[in-house]
Image (cartoon, rainbow, N blue to C red; front, side, top):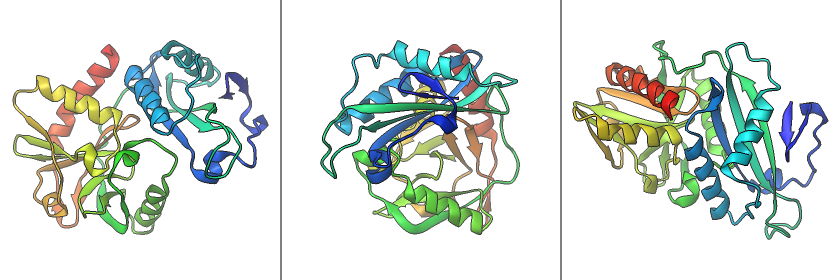
Length: 281
């Protein structure tokens, strides 16, 4: 079942217009959520990022789009899914209503909530081989739009095809200044000694929810120094650890980049703290 504008219906019965602006122009934003134990992980952060994204794209935010309303719509949707361990991946998609070409006829929106079961109710560390490479065919253009969770993800699609064709688990994306920005499916962190570094939003990385949690946790970890600073490709092989963060996986350690193999000590420590924070938030 999916939730289309507040109405539950089987997925194959929901009909979207052939002139859907999300399809025709990429005029849409989305949030991917992790739902477990009867709650949405870091829901307030997701909600406010969605509202900010809609404002940036000049969408009209409906009066009923409150924190409580959307949370209830998510719960209403996930209750239709038979998930054995009650762990669910949820996607909220919001797009501008049909009409117009590049210039829309209205700024009003539709929304769709879909969900699928996950294997574990909490974050677990994947310690299997996870080799990555740089994707250099296309670049992310740094700026505010690059930080949004919009459905303009063609670089991520092409990078994922490249990774699959070359037996990589993931790829790092570069911006127009040849700085490392993020991975195909999340933000990146580099560990060198006691310094943990992640690219700044101004370089064009996604304003990730898990990235935000990791940076906030850094304030309670006196043994480490966290910094937001540009990352050169030459730094990758000098790091002690590299890991990718997103709200579904939590933290994914990189095991190999080119000739360099990495440990996962810090990733394992942070993952335990992320699980605790998710349960308490």
